[in-house]
Image (cartoon, rainbow, N blue to C red):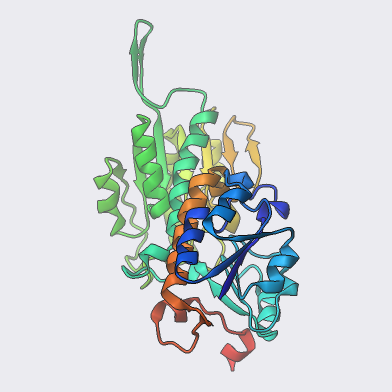
Length: 370
């Protein structure tokens, strides 16, 4: 079985990660896989072509050369400029976000391309070692706080000096999933006073365990979590109650990190234009939900803006790509664990009742509707 990876930074200069690092390639080769790597695929993440060769991979000049031989193509993101070249029987393993790219996904499925959506890996103990969403959220949560610290015009920690005492920065984290919890931990390490809110009541204990102050808001329901552990989409009335409850905390915060997302749909709007206008001059918002529309009314995905009131809103895309080396290591380990569990020398066996594979395997929309 031949696994292929491409130099994704050639299509998107923001993307500096690589789907498989040399250590993971070595693991796969030792188990009987063949791995084909496009030249320079790992250079932006500090992995040279020679590293892949020593790990046992074959390095080829172009993405076309990878596609010509690979049984399985592994990528970090979708869509791909070369996706139309995938042929019947090939397998694509990637973060699909089908709700954004439904038409192109259906076209590939109609051609007989098998697609495994990494974002659909269930949140179970057995699947934990393959959970790329959690891995990338860990990177994003950490990096978001570092970005905020770079842009905030004041210290994070309390400082006592001959010039007097400077109080610590006030940090508010909205959403206590993996990214939010990592943001809380990082902001605490830097010395900020941290408060956090999550719509799921079960998250309160996790917030407190990291030394942050949990915020409780009555939105009129406690049915806020899906069976998979993700936040459930709320009604507009409940969202409005959330905004009203968060408003005083947003107003006094120096840093706000928003991470609230609902899989398969637009991110909820939790911070209104009016709430932003009430914030302190110099305050910083880092919106980690920018890729799915953003959690603030003023978010411009991929852009940094400063309002007339002096509030900076950062809306980075592909934030884990800003730490490409360790982000690639984590993604690669997840991917290798997946391949080693399901792939054989003859390919991936799809007639399985395994809950992980069943959740990941995409079907044509028409077939599912029928």
